[in-house]
Length: 396
Image (cartoon, rainbow, N blue to C red; front, side, top):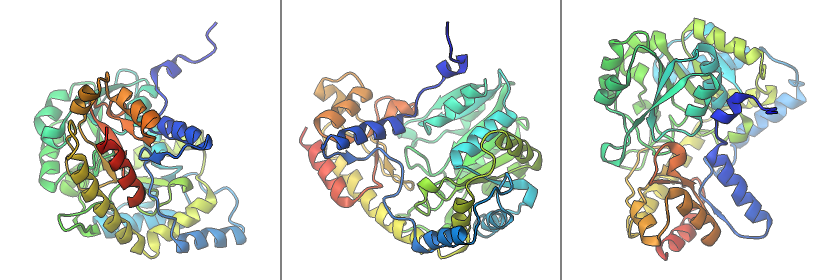
């Protein structure tokens, strides 16, 4: 007798969490592991945000809140979209959730039916396809690669759309590649989508502020998502964002989104029957993150840019490794097929295992992101750790 639901067989455990767990097991045994698998900033949550949480606790803000977030946090979310993105939303068009992951899950449960298709460019964030499968829909993976800077082209998008297409997923800056779509590239994709009004869009902007230019600096003003590139898509696009990456708040678990009122209402209904409201204290901290001092962003971006430049240059000196530059997030995504062949290994999964067990370096195989032959290295760790990892990789 099978006691488990059939849907469990459709999905895989999170590869990034699995690598982190394995690395932690080895650490518990006293083995020093250089962790380049986890996607979270190595900075502490800023003190003003910590203090806001402490004040909220002392003031007794420990009760249930509205399912979709406190009025104060929702107002801050509305102001963020207006000030940073020049987009206007009403109270009924935004909501807060327990992390960006729940935003995506809520959306899938709210809009997808059996047989619906969801276009997902690869490399993709590991959870997109599985959350689509949990909603009984079909992920349609479109392969991109290093030669096209890991970005889906208008021709590819047009070819992937069918009568069953319900949703198109775009993530910029990208996890795992760090690729950033330009305004003109987004406008070209928008032209395709204009011909298919039945297709909804979700733009995952969680790394919005983790970007840098050629000078190594980032700014809020030059970010663009597909709605900002073509406002005619606003009435069928959901924007996903959160405080985890930009404010070093991964453990606080606050994501948020904006979109058409009917869809947000449906997502709120899903949330109301699953987790209910996000943590009240974390909401108070997120309010301070969005409305308070923003200096942490510039500090982190400058550091991530420096690490990026170092790691890309060094990886490209290794025989069998080809590492492109990126413009955001905090990952490098090198092609390692030559290294796999040189070591006599089968694939990127075996290489990742080799790196963990032989070199004590935790990284994530590209196949977890729909891109066999690549690996993802997170440089959200200290430069000292990065140099240790690079030295070990250069000596294999």
